[in-house]
Image (cartoon, rainbow, N blue to C red; front, side, top):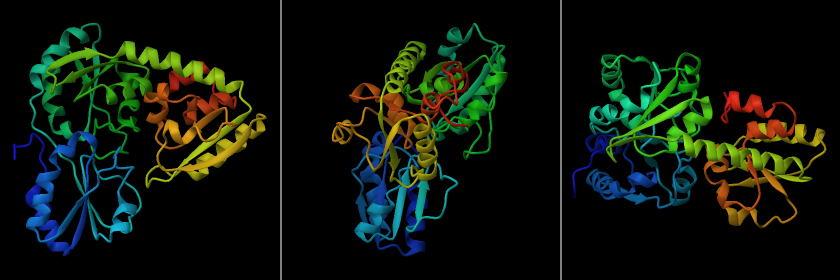
Length: 336
């Protein structure tokens, strides 16, 4: 096996499985970490347990493999790549392995400096894998004349941390910074930060060893969101999607939105759903558009896949007359 750039905490894993006396263990990983599955299986088997890897998609700590574990008769879930959420206790015990990495960021942050030259005050954000580097990267930016702020709204495990649907640490300091620098791989979290704060965001990607802006992608998404809102305003029948995954079930929120939209003259169908896919929504031809109370990134990142508009909660508030488009642009696409 090739050495991993991620800390999979295999020794801790062996001790935890042994201590708990787990006989059957479900291992759950997000897409980018699934290549590490064989190492984790080896660790679980070394502890004398049967390991079963969940091959389904995993989008975050809101998407825990609890039902799968119950179905398989497992007595423990190993969840890789996300920090532990502050949510209710699950029916099956879960061990969270954050998979932090020591990938060097300094040279990539150096590449980001020319892209940050127009701004003095920079907000630093990252995923759980890189939170240990934030202080070092802050010092590097300070040496180059920048003012640096790392937000802490208290909702996530670490200051400066962002996850796909929670940018509270960025939102907490957006009034105090000119732009954000995201440390990590890919555009996903950087686009989320830009949509949540309405601030320019630069990516310093240590895996691709480059820095770049995502403004063009963000502007494309915003234009598409306005078109979806406009189309939904003309629609009579709306479906409200209620998530069935452990961290995406927001029934009360769905009922509140239903009442508001019904008061606005819309006809509403409530739909309980585990995986929101274009194919699943195509089964309801009478529904003209959808309001998504599950993961908001489905609406924002996958819009082109759907034949009909799939709005976020804040976008539904525009339809109901609670927010104007201008207020939405200022407030951002994620709930506070």
